[in-house]
View 1 (cartoon, helix red, strand yellow):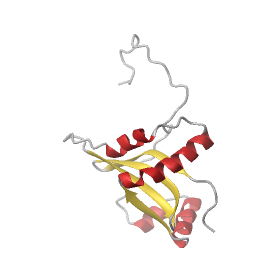
View 2: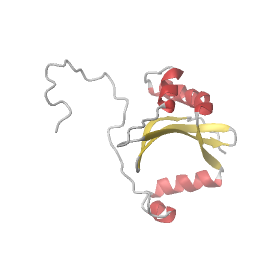
View 3: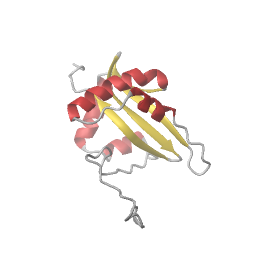
View 4: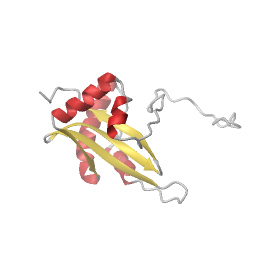
Length: 145
Protein backbone atom coordinates (compact mmCIF):
# COMPACT_ATOMS: atom_id res chain seq x y z
CA UNK A 1 0.00 0.00 0.00
CA UNK A 2 1.33 3.40 -0.94
CA UNK A 3 1.58 6.20 1.62
CA UNK A 4 -0.16 8.60 -0.71
CA UNK A 5 -3.10 6.32 -1.59
CA UNK A 6 -6.28 8.33 -2.09
CA UNK A 7 -4.60 11.67 -1.27
CA UNK A 8 -4.82 13.36 -4.69
CA UNK A 9 -6.95 16.20 -3.31
CA UNK A 10 -5.07 16.77 -0.06
CA UNK A 11 -2.67 19.31 -1.63
CA UNK A 12 0.49 17.68 -0.29
CA UNK A 13 3.73 19.33 -1.38
CA UNK A 14 7.24 17.92 -1.20
CA UNK A 15 9.38 19.72 1.36
CA UNK A 16 12.11 21.94 -0.01
CA UNK A 17 14.75 19.80 1.68
CA UNK A 18 14.98 16.37 3.25
CA UNK A 19 15.50 16.23 7.01
CA UNK A 20 15.56 12.46 7.40
CA UNK A 21 18.01 9.94 5.94
CA UNK A 22 17.15 8.41 2.58
CA UNK A 23 18.30 4.92 3.60
CA UNK A 24 17.79 2.62 6.56
CA UNK A 25 20.19 0.02 7.92
CA UNK A 26 18.89 -2.90 9.98
CA UNK A 27 21.45 -4.40 12.34
CA UNK A 28 20.79 -7.47 14.47
CA UNK A 29 22.49 -6.80 17.81
CA UNK A 30 22.08 -10.32 19.22
CA UNK A 31 25.55 -11.63 18.18
CA UNK A 32 28.42 -10.80 20.53
CA UNK A 33 30.50 -7.65 20.02
CA UNK A 34 33.40 -9.43 18.28
CA UNK A 35 31.12 -10.88 15.61
CA UNK A 36 29.42 -7.51 15.09
CA UNK A 37 32.83 -5.85 14.64
CA UNK A 38 33.90 -8.53 12.13
CA UNK A 39 30.82 -7.76 10.02
CA UNK A 40 31.66 -4.03 9.84
CA UNK A 41 33.78 -2.31 7.24
CA UNK A 42 37.48 -2.08 8.20
CA UNK A 43 37.38 1.72 8.55
CA UNK A 44 34.38 1.48 10.91
CA UNK A 45 36.17 -1.11 13.06
CA UNK A 46 39.27 1.08 13.09
CA UNK A 47 37.33 4.16 14.23
CA UNK A 48 35.51 2.25 16.98
CA UNK A 49 38.79 0.87 18.33
CA UNK A 50 40.47 4.28 18.01
CA UNK A 51 37.68 5.90 20.03
CA UNK A 52 38.15 3.25 22.75
CA UNK A 53 41.93 3.83 22.82
CA UNK A 54 41.39 7.59 23.08
CA UNK A 55 38.95 7.10 25.98
CA UNK A 56 35.90 8.46 24.16
CA UNK A 57 32.84 7.61 26.22
CA UNK A 58 29.13 7.51 25.40
CA UNK A 59 26.58 8.32 28.08
CA UNK A 60 22.80 8.34 28.12
CA UNK A 61 21.37 11.66 29.30
CA UNK A 62 17.94 13.00 30.05
CA UNK A 63 16.88 16.64 30.07
CA UNK A 64 20.16 17.53 31.80
CA UNK A 65 21.93 16.91 28.46
CA UNK A 66 19.76 19.25 26.41
CA UNK A 67 22.17 22.21 26.49
CA UNK A 68 25.01 20.03 25.23
CA UNK A 69 22.75 18.61 22.53
CA UNK A 70 21.61 22.05 21.40
CA UNK A 71 25.17 23.38 21.19
CA UNK A 72 26.24 20.46 18.95
CA UNK A 73 23.00 20.61 16.97
CA UNK A 74 23.35 24.34 16.20
CA UNK A 75 26.94 23.81 15.04
CA UNK A 76 25.83 20.95 12.77
CA UNK A 77 22.83 22.87 11.40
CA UNK A 78 24.92 25.94 10.51
CA UNK A 79 27.60 23.78 8.87
CA UNK A 80 25.04 21.80 6.84
CA UNK A 81 22.72 24.75 6.16
CA UNK A 82 19.67 23.12 7.70
CA UNK A 83 16.82 24.62 9.69
CA UNK A 84 17.62 25.20 13.37
CA UNK A 85 14.73 24.26 15.62
CA UNK A 86 14.30 25.95 18.98
CA UNK A 87 15.39 24.17 22.16
CA UNK A 88 11.75 23.46 23.05
CA UNK A 89 11.51 21.19 19.98
CA UNK A 90 14.40 19.04 21.25
CA UNK A 91 12.89 19.04 24.74
CA UNK A 92 9.59 17.76 23.34
CA UNK A 93 11.38 14.94 21.47
CA UNK A 94 13.31 13.95 24.59
CA UNK A 95 10.21 14.05 26.76
CA UNK A 96 8.15 11.91 24.35
CA UNK A 97 6.96 8.68 25.89
CA UNK A 98 4.44 6.70 23.87
CA UNK A 99 2.54 4.37 26.18
CA UNK A 100 0.55 2.59 23.49
CA UNK A 101 0.55 -1.12 24.40
CA UNK A 102 1.25 -2.10 20.79
CA UNK A 103 4.23 0.21 20.40
CA UNK A 104 5.65 1.70 23.60
CA UNK A 105 8.56 4.08 22.92
CA UNK A 106 11.40 5.57 24.90
CA UNK A 107 13.65 8.37 23.64
CA UNK A 108 17.22 8.68 24.90
CA UNK A 109 19.85 11.30 24.30
CA UNK A 110 23.29 9.73 23.77
CA UNK A 111 26.35 11.97 24.02
CA UNK A 112 29.87 10.93 23.01
CA UNK A 113 32.57 12.84 24.88
CA UNK A 114 36.31 13.07 25.22
CA UNK A 115 36.78 13.89 28.88
CA UNK A 116 34.36 16.74 29.51
CA UNK A 117 34.29 17.85 25.85
CA UNK A 118 31.24 16.69 23.86
CA UNK A 119 31.98 15.35 20.38
CA UNK A 120 28.63 14.09 19.10
CA UNK A 121 25.08 13.45 20.19
CA UNK A 122 21.97 11.70 18.94
CA UNK A 123 18.40 10.95 19.89
CA UNK A 124 17.73 7.22 19.99
CA UNK A 125 14.07 6.10 19.91
CA UNK A 126 13.54 2.60 21.25
CA UNK A 127 10.32 0.82 20.37
CA UNK A 128 10.03 -2.84 21.24
CA UNK A 129 13.13 -4.53 19.83
CA UNK A 130 14.04 -1.69 17.46
CA UNK A 131 16.21 1.36 18.00
CA UNK A 132 16.07 4.23 15.51
CA UNK A 133 18.30 7.27 15.25
CA UNK A 134 16.08 10.34 15.08
CA UNK A 135 18.53 13.24 15.02
CA UNK A 136 22.28 13.50 15.23
CA UNK A 137 24.86 16.23 15.72
CA UNK A 138 28.62 16.15 15.30
CA UNK A 139 31.46 18.48 16.19
CA UNK A 140 34.06 18.53 13.42
CA UNK A 141 36.77 20.55 15.12
CA UNK A 142 39.61 18.27 16.15
CA UNK A 143 39.52 17.71 19.89
CA UNK A 144 41.08 14.28 20.41
CA UNK A 145 44.86 14.23 19.93
